[in-house]
Image (cartoon, rainbow, N blue to C red; front, side, top):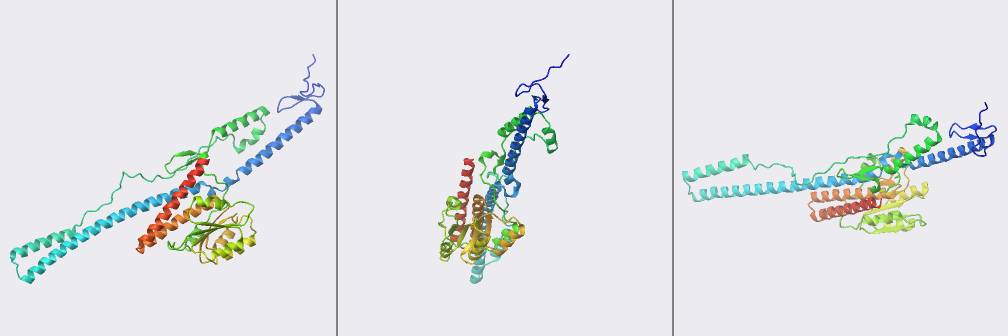
Length: 415
């Protein structure tokens, strides 16, 4: 009994027909080569898709540069302000109570002293007056030894400061690295099903972030910040902080932006007006920029060195750091990958506070730094008993914080 031969799926030929172990279809000699070419093309597509996927995950390789860190910084600063504000109110109330107590005791002592003085001057006292004075003196001594009972109590009517908690939901792992080889041996139909299932899971699943009230927020509300270039080390930030001068409300606050690429619009000049109402000046020529800085006082400079060569950067930074009127420098540009090179740059140019490739990350850092400087300046003026300048610094810091909060909320709504 003869066995019926299966025809080629392409041309129907029954001679020299081969079975494909993958799709379980029959092909003749001519079309089996064509089929292998098709499979090779599909493999090329998979490899290309893998390369694209790998490139898209590059920004996540540096967790210390995640944009949510900016929001954590804002929460941290907000919590510190609330604590400092509450502590200052408690100090003021305690000082007021102590002053009132001291004033009352001074009045009592003065009155008692006057009674003794009058009695001796007029020589008009008997055992009765002496006993009364002894009793009064004993009462005063008891008040000295047992002052007013002052305690610190927690006000439970005021909302507490909620701690941050990071939560994330992610798509289930469809396969482990050890099972990749097993997956490649599956049938074509199974591979297609796995691919579709994976896409569905990705569509249904979203990463999450947290706000200051422990509420989970979908990723679409996340601040859209692409790969930032660098984050300063703590020792570099502390070194630069020592160089910051005391903010002087009697002097104008200047913000100067140098953008050396006239073909592209400056991102700094687009975002900075949303964060401050201080005057901002934009320069496209280096010489004009440096000449203008000579007539400015108390200036923070922003420099876009994205398209500048290494020699141009060094030359420009050398000139900028010679100006006494410049308090801080913020640089938009790719940071140094080597830790030693980065550390050397911040030691050589102590006025540089931050260098980020991402402009939003850079300006958020500037906002936080400036808010802290206003707070520190206000505290120093309080110590100097200069309430007018202290009030100015505190109010400016609060305004800047409000602008920053609005900016971050707007970016969340865009997502």
